[in-house]
Every structure is written in C-alpha cells, then in structure tokens.
Length: 328
Image 1 (cartoon, rainbow, N blue to C red):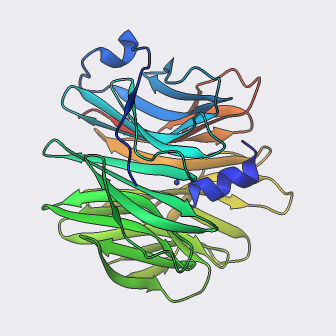
Image 2: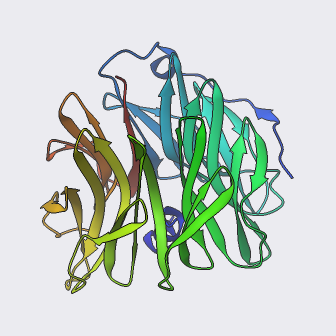
C-alpha cells in the first residue's frame, strides 16, 4: 500500500459473519500476562501482530491484509483490520486469537479501524463504502449499526467504552464528529477539513485527538487545544490519559518533504525521530509509568518505549505499526 493511500486509511479505517480458516500461532494463543506488549500493523502484504517484539503473520500474503487495532481482554487477543479477500474490494475483518472473521461481505470496500472489548462484547468502528461515499459504522458482536446515512463521506476511526456508553470518533462530511451511543453529540470542529482520529474517556472527561488546517488538535469535552502553531502541517492520531497526564501521538510534515513522529505530553512536544525519513507515531499506551508508542520510520515498523526506538522489522520493505496495547 502506498503511503498516500495509507494516510487516508489512518484518517481516518449487509454484514457477513462467516468465519475463514487461519492458522493459529502459539505466540497468540499463549495466555497474555502482565507486561506483555502487543503491536498490530502490516508487513508488506501481511497483517502482523508483534508480541514482545516477536512477529506473527495473521494472513497468508496472497491478498493484501493489514491490522489497524489490537485489544487484549482476559485471555483473548482481538485485532481489527481489513483484507483484500477474493474480490476486487476490501473486507472489514477482525481476528480473535489469530482466527479471522469477516464483518462485511466483499461487495464494497470496508475498513475495521478500531476495536474495544467490554463485558465480553466486541465493538468495532469502521467504514463501508457505497459508490463513492463512506458510511461510518459501529459493529457490536458482528452486527452493524450505521452512524451516518451516506449522503456525505464519513468514517468512524476510534471506539471507546466507558460506563456502558459507546463513544466513537470520526468525521462526517469532512467535519470532526463524536458519536455517543449512536447519536451525534456535536460537530466538535466547525472548520471544514477537520478529522477526529481517536477518543478516550477518563473520570467522565471525553478527550478527542485529530487534525485539520495544519493543526494537530486535542478536544477535552468539546474545548479545542491546538498542539502546534500551524506553521507546518501536523496531525494527531492517538490519545491516552494516565492520571493527570494526557498523551497524544502524531507527526509533523516538514519542509524537506519528510515527516517527524511526535509525542505530546500535556501539550509539550517531543520529537521521536529526526525527520530524515517519513515517520509517524500512530498509537500510544501508558503502563507502569512507561510510555509505549507504535509507528513507523522509513521502512521500519517501530515501537518506542520512553522515547527509545525498537525496530520491529528489518527495513527491507515497507512496514507499519498502527496500534499498541500493554497487558496490565
């Protein structure tokens, strides 16, 4: 997948529940334990899950497949993504412990962008295209609910469950949107060309990260904070709240036509790369005072721990890491 199309997927990511066979791997089926670090992404044409730096391919590489989100609940590892499967279209897909399930029937393009498990219910946020318009969707246990009516292009990019309420961040008609329990709460940014990429709820406060008009953006309960001065194009893709600290990851596109992976903590920025390659920080997770960031730098899928990079791949071809989850 070329990087231009990849940015669209990040901007962002009738139901069939037929299972497809997929070889299980001991690395996934091993019971998760405290401190295990899971990273989901793509390696060439394969969807990949890295567990503590060791890769497991989720697909056979015959069709392009990618994993965009990982979530661990109890003894189970859940992954959301997409696969170019048997037709000219992509299907939205999830994996549970390495076994795949299609969420869509392959009659049109679809993405599963984010996954969250609550009380054994599996929620997935994504999009399905009808002609040239994306319909933002939330699947609960494989059953789809449309969040938009298809009159405008829309995506659902992130899902978070808090107090039994289902929050989804995305965009509708190129305006940043937050849905709560399927109802649009507000167009959280009235600027055309604003996108909501991630949502996180902590102590009743609702945080949304995204971008628009050169700015990486953070909203807290609908109040906007721009994370950069707008001189260069910035984007925010992920958010995590730990105590009083708010972490946001993203990137800056610089004047040398490369990009710099970035981490903001309480609005203060840290560069994770020097900008010599095309790099992005796509996901953040905080555990035991350690800050884990997934992303990519050049051809390498990367996991940063407290700012120190671990390359997950050899760098011989294009790979990306999109999501990180640490078992508590």
